[in-house]
Amino acid sequence: MCCALLIEKEVSMIVGYLRVLITALVMGGIMVVFLKLFPKKHKLIFLIAGLVPAVFIIIRLIQRIVTIDHIGYILHGIPFTLCGLCSFLIPFTVLTKNKVVTNFIYFISLPSTILALAADGTITLPLSNFDFWGFVIPHTMYFVHIGLMMFFKYVKPEIKKLPTVLAAFCVMISIMHILNLLTMWLFPTGDAWTTNYIFTMYPGDRGGPPDYVISPRIILEQAWDILPVRYVYLYLLIPVLAVVCGLLSLPLIKKTTYKRFFGRFKRKKAAMAAGIEEEVDNVVEVDNWGKAENGVDAGEATEVKDQDEGLSE
Image (cartoon, rainbow, N blue to C red; front, top):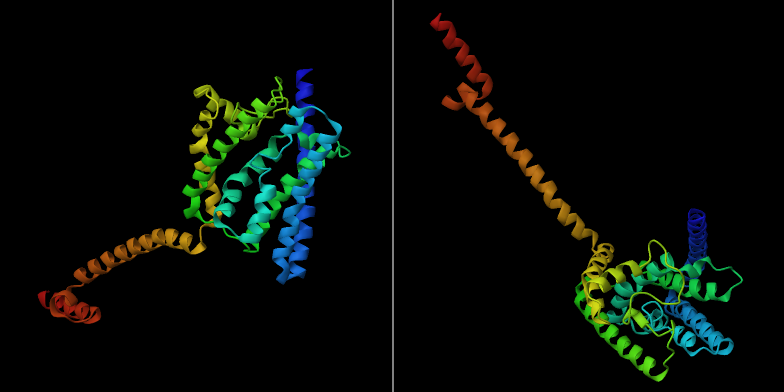
């Protein structure tokens, strides 16, 4: 029974991944067509596309407010998450090209979006459920939008800004923790829907969608087991975040840097090969009796040597 349920859950997730992939291809294809047709309107196209997630998130929040009178559920729908903040940071980036914000959405929000799409059970909801589209459209658009802005060189994250990005992340979780404490004081729900923006209160979303094998909650719970202190335990994830940022830095490295790096090994190998050939030439030159002693070429030296051997006989 348990095995059958596990298989059913994994199959539903695979179907959900296919839905996400199709959604990403459709939205990415539409954006590419417009970007190619209107090369001088990239800013406007990126701005309109960047506002799409914000529209879906606002509609989803209004739906919760109208249909559900549970204050905890409504507070839980406010987009104070690493992914949700993209809804407002991406349009800001399109308008200003602010380097700090650009690096933040690339190094912090982008991996958070990928993890959310990979682990959240919302992608298994029926297509008729608005919560499915309200989750998949914004999260998929974050990934597609950031990728296309980089591909068309509208913005360019910088590796040297990584310390600033990590510092901004620390400031953000501090602000979110204060907000969590404030909402708990103003709206004491006393149940599973206590606000937990950016997981500063505890690992994972209590009362949220089910966990899956690749859920980020696994990492959060490991940090909580080591240091079970609200807010503070997130600082144990800084090394993990630094590794993720390092991996995301690889596509940003210029090709010339790679060529210089690997060119050193090629030059060293060529130098070693040239040194061996030079040693072989030296040996041949020393063995060549006539050239070494009389300064004549190899053919003349051989002829003189043969004449000497004939006289000795």
